[in-house]
Length: 488
Image 1 (cartoon, rainbow, N blue to C red):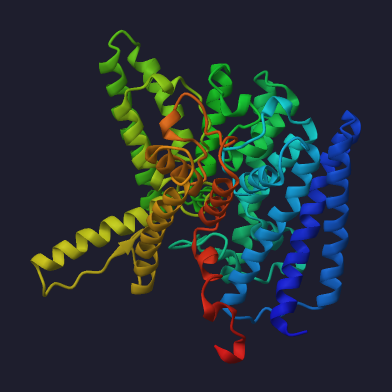
Image 2: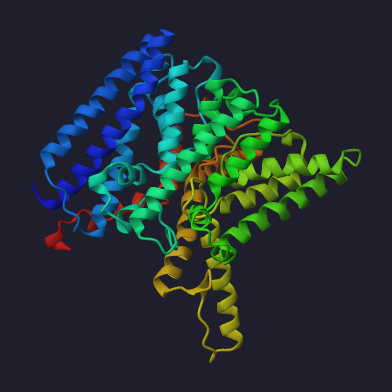
């Protein structure tokens, strides 16, 4: 067995064992609740993952770290597709009244942290809700990141492999050794999850619902377990807790490393954080103003608070509805639609184009115009006060182009279904950004139960492409990607 296969088998084997272990609480819950269909499905998949992962690691032997970058991408893509495929039988056996395609959609939405679904939350078994929340957390934090943090023998692997799951202009540039960095990030998300669970329980939310909320909200996966994403009726104290942790989940995790290292000056230099916070505040003020003009009798401060919480839900790509935004003016929907393309910060649990790439694109446009006016000038494009290489600039700007191609291409294929062009654009954007909320229907989260099987598959592909940030997804269609090392 060559070193490439050893590498892939080792990482996928680790992913299988971790997923199998994370399914055990759902298995125990299904036994306690007497949910036998889920017990059979979860028990079989859990055992299969643990035994299969152990066999793969033993069969592959010692891992070889020196592999080509294409093997990193191949490993990440195969791992994600494998875990989604293994989750399909769990949903299918747990909800047998639905089709395999429906189960595939639910599995894809769960792993990609997309706040959309086909299953009615009220009819789902408790243990299946926990499976979905577990997949949300693993997908949001990143299964590759989790492997490198929890498996001691994998901690020597570093930037190259993790960057295929969290691509972007930079990753964990905190000044610390990379191994310490990604382990601390996983620890931070674990602490966020535990803290949110405790606060929600203390605020009066039932313990099980608090657990599902903490797992799903930390990963900005929405709140499908709460009335299919309709969280308007929740008490204000619970809304505030959910909003705070949705925001934290959508912030670049480098911020938390700087906080733990007590480096406030480094935080103040993060242009992405500044822009993200400014965008949230400015958009909230504009939307609150539009709503107040449309209905002058409203309390402006109360309206601003409701809008701020909803804006954070949209911008973090969580996608739950926490205020009565179905009554907002149409102009508000257009503003939100444009902003949702950008999404959250890079290296976070949120989706979208990301704030960092948007900043680079804007600076590229500004610099290009400046050089047209001053052709002989010498200026360098910087990000966080550091110069960017041409390769980083091209990658960031090309990603935006690819993102829009996937968005329009997905909308074109969805328009073949019995929906309007506007709905096709809305649902394509909702799936690709992993938000799951169609702006065309602000009164309720997106529902795809009535779509054709073809449209559901298209949306599954969009969710996976959006979560893996397109590059690993598109590489599998390139001939050079599949060539052996000797042929490259």
